Length: 186
Image 1 (cartoon, one colour):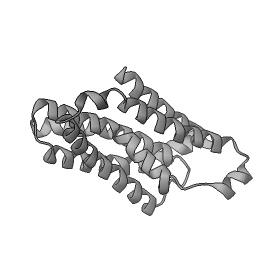
Image 2 (cartoon, helix red, strand yellow):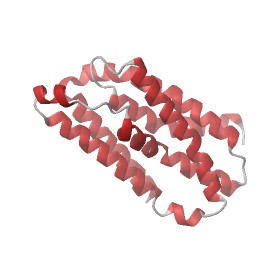
Image 3 (tube, one colour):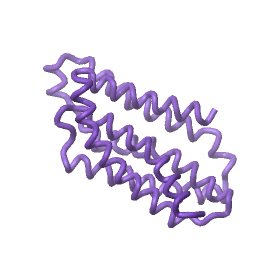
């Protein structure tokens, strides 16, 4: 497979990570450099790892996994999106006291898995085509890192335009990404 084709695939796979990073950084000040790096490293690691797992699974259990991978991604994004929407509807005073960092803990893990389900499916495809996986997985991880950083830098700009509705829009965007994944696989 050519480098151009692999980069195109990597860019397509990184769009979910990009959209989620925009959604998480919609606040006027965005997120910190530390949070950006934590998000980018986690997303890129999972984008690197999932095609490898998918490739391995594709060589062994392809038909079992394809039946439900999209439901997992949808469920994870729905859960986190609903949490963001619920948070946006709280009174301002309450939100400042109880704001969770989405770049830590379970939220980060769930977002990393949800945004990399398509990369898992791409690993299945590579296995079905008889292609190697290490080089494509590395490129997919690097592109995901770069797109996540770009998303966190564009998020505050979009957030200033969206104003107080930014977190509500961010949560809605996550849910819509989950629905898109579901529709693409049905």
